[in-house]
Image (cartoon, rainbow, N blue to C red; front, side, top):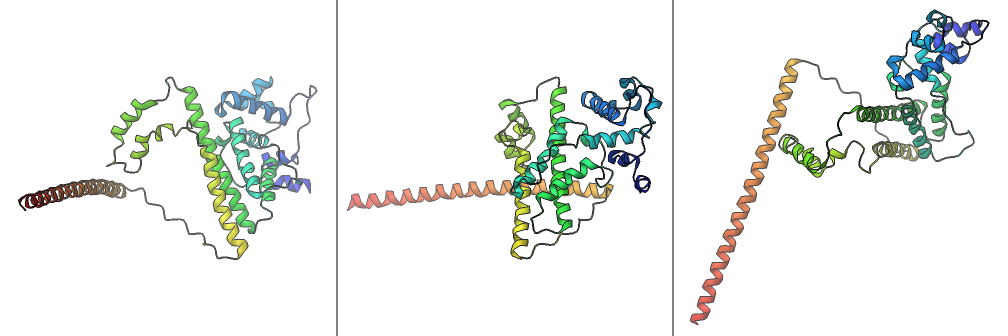
Length: 325
């Protein structure tokens, strides 16, 4: 039975479950799959994922590169084992009762914590559904939190994918911004002078919805220096949506069916040219509407002045008649 399981699984997956045949250790008993993976993680944490190689791992451990292949078949095996190893995170006990929103909030946040501790984690491509034990333990935790919700099994899996994808995306952005700041040779542009300079470029005509944010200074502070936690804000809005869906399910109300994905726009020169022409036309239209609004405002101003002048003239005639009377 064990042989059948091993044969059906990729080598790295079988190794992670402990069902793959392991080589007999040599006299020194110093090399193992665990040491190989731990060393690879240390290299990635300090030097980045590109620094991880079979030769680098072997040199760090004091062995030949070929000796590693007695334990793993390739670097890809090592990467998958690294990914699963750092997913061995503290999971709340089964008997811990918590509100599902609080539970999913903690569950999604765990992805951010893994990426902060191991910035290379999202650089390992996702090759398919989770198959390794620590990955599955995390997924099982999320499904446990959702066990009381009136959702179908596919809906629970889609909810887990939604939250994990969001957390992963935000984690990557936070990591990249942090690394860029660490590598920057000059401080990021800030201050009133920078905002004014940027406002000269980001005009109302070309960027009608972004320009007000630039003038207010919000855009310049959007890299995390303001008080808003972008991850927390987005997560709460996602949980609001899930709450709305769950409430509708519980009350027996109809819920909107998932719409099919829109057809992708072909990457074609003619399409790009017409899209550019549309944007330019929209810009001209916005400019024309602005001129129209300005013209209306000036016309109203002239009308108001004319009415004031006429009223004043009428009042003057009235006072003259009174004086003659």
